Each structure stands twice: as structure tokens, then as C-alpha cells.
Length: 297
Picture 1 (tube, rainbow, N blue to C red):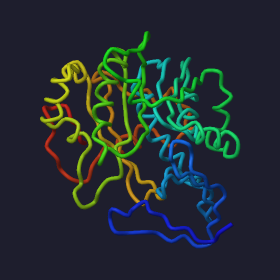
Picture 2 (spheres, rainbow, N blue to C red):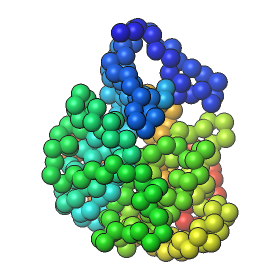
Picture 3 (cartoon, helix red, strand yellow):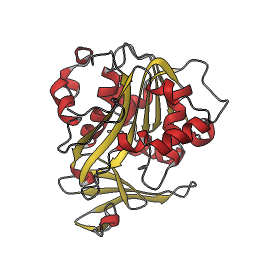
Picture 4 (cartoon, rainbow, N blue to C red):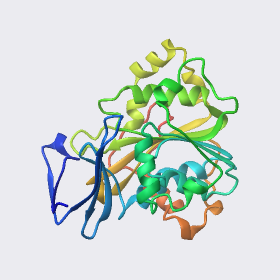
């Protein structure tokens, strides 16, 4: 038991947070080398930290997961097959499974010990998702699964990538493009967590992905960038997450001729609706769009 915890989530900005009256409820280093901690703090409740950085907090995790999942599900017409990459707390699966028409959710999580810990002791995140027969979990390294020549027999209607921040991990962009090219159905929707918005550089995830050198790289690797962008809109959007000390950014590709179907979503099960979505993909600065594909309101 301890009553002091140092949060390293914003160390790149030269900031660290010292939480008083914090209790370390769980601490271990997994076989994969992840320093996994569950910290309880007054008012905030339980929070998951990995390698000293916040991953999910009981107080506001629903804001994050609903903002990530619901806009993508709403832009997919009757989504039946959904792929989740990451999401070891079970909350991503929880939000997906509440949508009607969902028949199968395939989840790829690298670290089995993290999932087992949430299953055993922190079930409030999944809220029953672990027991849902529609959920199928694979403990694999997704970067070894999504490789040229290895494609699913039946593509997915929605793909959600909830991994680390792309900054410092350029392989995430390649993963995003490979999935969009070969794992997504013709009318499918794909989205990813794109990091915390940097107030100093204000880099836009849509601009990052659509930059010329990346498009050229994907073309050289044989990935159909024209197919990826064909009849799709590229959206960046953001939502403020108090426990992240900033705005979580997301990048998604959605069919250009589909209006989001919010009526399929029980308004009591999510804070997201048409006005929320408009606010989330409205940016308070001007950026010129890329080839007419990148949209800002």
C-alpha cells in the first residue's frame, strides 16, 4: 500500500503529476515486459497505468470509448463483423456489443496477462462483455498477423485500432493502411486512436496519414491507396479526456454517401449523438483540406 504515485503521462512536455492519497491496488510486470499498475485515487476512482502512463480511468473511460466506437458504428450500415485491436480492459468490446446487428467481435490483444487481470478483478470496464458469446479473443502480435498475403476469409464491417500513439511509432500508419486495404469490407469503416492533441504543434492526424511521402510509401508497398480513399471521407476528431490531461484524437475513414444512423443507438447508453459528433470533428483552427477528402466543419 502506498499513498503517493508519480504519473509520467505528460513527461514529453516536461510535466509530471504527483497524486496524493493514491493506493496501488495492483502492480506487476507481465511476461511481455509491460509494467502494469492499477491505481485508486480519490474522486477519480480506479485507473490503469502501463509503464507509468495513464491508459484508462474509471471516471471518464466511457467518454473515451463511446466517442471512439459510436461514430464509427453509426457510419456503418448494419455492422455485423467488428475487429478490435487492443482494448484489453474490455470496454471497447462493451461499447461495440451494445449495437444491434453485431454478430461477431474479433479482438486482438497482445498481452494476455492484462486481459486476465481485468477479467478477474476489474470487471466494471467490460460490464459483461467477457461473457458475451459473440466476443472472440486472440492473444497475438497484430503486426505479425496483418502482413502481405494474410487476409481474413470474410472482411470486417468495422475495424477499431486502440494501440499506442503514432508519434514515435510510424508502423501504426502502415498497419492502418494495410487493414483498410485488405481487411475491410467494401463499405467498411475503420478508425484508430491517434494520440493526444499537442497544443504546441497541433499536428492533425488526417494530415499525417494523407501526407505525400506516406501515400508514396504505401503505393510502393503495393497497398491500394486509391481503393482506401475511394468513396470515403477522412475525418479527424477529438474529445477532451480529463484523465489524459488533454484531447484524445481519432482518425477514421467512413463511406462518403452514408449519413450516420444515430437512431440505432439507445440514447441512454451513450453520450454521443448527431450534435456531439459535429462538435467532435470541428477544430478551432483552420487547416486546408487534402485533395478535398479531409473535412473540417
